[in-house]
Image 1 (tube, rainbow, N blue to C red):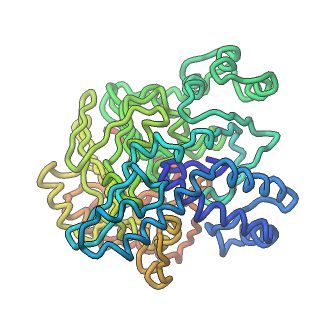
Image 2 (cartoon, one colour):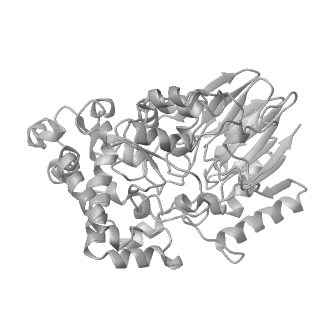
Image 3 (tube, rainbow, N blue to C red):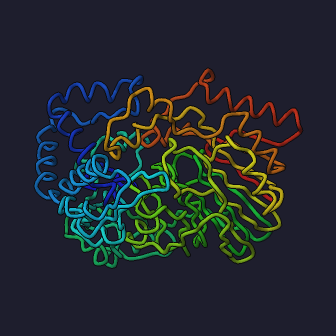
Length: 510
């Protein structure tokens, strides 16, 4: 998106405008003032995951050109972001509990027809965005979108939230929107061979681009021979929070974030996926759980992408359903305890508690999958801060055979991910108290107890080296999170509950 990595806050138009105006443009400006400081900070392990641009000073002119282009071509978005801040200030100053009708003419023109003013039941006023309409406005510009194709080298890429991707000789640049049908044709060629001529026409390539693409293609299939199963059930762990649940009749993938490097030999990759995926389950909208880089490579092979329903119009809660449908995906939106059948089983959406810095974000869901006689709880980063919630889940759905949980129990502060959406400053002490944290050992144990889970497994939390460009995390045996995982595993061992700390790849069959 304007050369920055695509994730919900850079694609969904309201949030993208705020991120562009309040994060990305200031970041580019800061880099141009002192490129050497940004490069040095990017290579400092103590500052990993910080907002620094990791582009050599010798390419500063290209960064300056990018900034100039954004200021010129995205002026509508930048004005819209300013209008949001101004509209919020009008409400803070003038919405005192009385009729809001007189405030509409005072709103910036850029918000006209795209917002509604409303009080909550505590008499606090807010802007509610009519998000489907914003996608029809000039604020949503598909011209921002482009795709880069390159080989996975094993060398960590720059951090996705800070460094834009400039052109490179070894990268094929495609100036096409994400919904372009040519991308679907390209990636379906993993499972159904296609000719170079067909792909060139589908992607509308020129001669030079066709030569580059040709070097990326193979005349031999690379798909794993055991990617399907003939009987029973199977779960495979692909890394981070990605699971593949299979029977002979169906396949479910959770939060797909999948390595492309089939030469590594220590992980499942795109080559290990079944040819057809009935459902992709997205738990929440963080950049490590809804990964467009992986999702775009699955389009055309997926029955539907299942996403939690947002609160509709909340600044911090963009609709994943709208976002993905505009990128060409078939989408099913779910609320708590909605059921989605698939051949031989069903998925039930279950509540997701916490992990979003106490913001009013409702587009988050855990899932309960029933397949081949087993119940699987897919817990993502949901917190066990109120264990009674999981008692309700068990009461409704039964006992879990497997529970998969996240234990990032000391997450990043509020401003790390949401700074651009905050229209008034938040004190650092306040921000630091509100973290992107999931369960600790005690809370994870409470989830297991309330679900009656027979086995419990903790996701790797960005520990896989190949996720560094997204996660920017560093752990060792003395890290608080690792100690908490070990405490949880000890708790399970004392109760003869089979448990594990997942890493790279693992398989369960029955």
